[in-house]
Image (tube, rainbow, N blue to C red; front, top):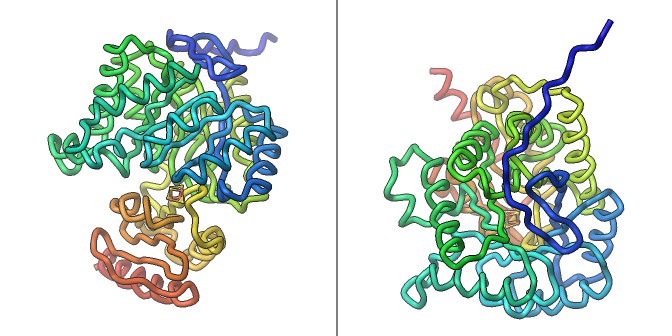
Length: 385
Ligand code: SF4
């Protein structure tokens, strides 16, 4: 008996974008990426982590730089590793010209360019970044993130519509790059909710099927939940031909970061083999814990452990549709927890805590769990009333 024919996945006709020794888009294999979570200035630890990621099969490794000292550290790291490197400029876009000669790709977040708008309009900043990328043989990624969309774009849409501002922001930036005649870029549109990741990428690809997409569910959390959430989004998108490069973001300790690559490769293999099984509305009907994958901005390494403790402590509330966010830093934590019912973000000595958009306070690491439990219990009583 013949086995049933697997439907071929017809990839979107995206253009080819070279990133160092690989290319993404068009018919190139879907690339698997990760990001270092060590402090960038800890050169030995960062080099070790990059080697781990490379050994696991990473096609591109992203490193965050926040300061000139980070940039100098990355130059030394570059001397010690040979993989394709992407730099995450965070809010310091001017460091692009310092670091671009040493990397293969520049990632910026449009939501970070509106700061100091009076000093220089965002379009000028994009032009500057493009010129730096062009002069240094770098690709670019326009990385739109649900938690940090330009407020001027956001206010043009209804408050409960988080998808349209992300799309608008991405399209605006694509238009500027297109006008400048620069087509060596890809786009990412990330959210912590896999259903939103599916919708926003599907809608983007409908309008711009030519632009390669980097897929990811941000703050997916700890394995196995983080892998399941990511898999739901990837299966739905990749089996429809959408997606040219991926990252599975997991909250894991630094010595387990290579699990992101292993998980990404496994998901791709299974999709290619036709083993697509995600049908559940995961995370929307039950307790949903989202947590960031951590990066060089983490100021207290207890963050990963805290995420695990939160998951253990909250198991009793699994049947409630409540979202708890646990973020690794003070910079993105406040914004990235905005949509959660209860949000925590980690500082050097204290954990900041809020309920919805209201700040509750900052608590020492050994006092936060009982405080969280008290708020969770109150929320459960309200939801059960
Ligand atoms: Fe890094 Fe902070 Fe984002 Fe976590 S929330 S990945 S620590 S920038």
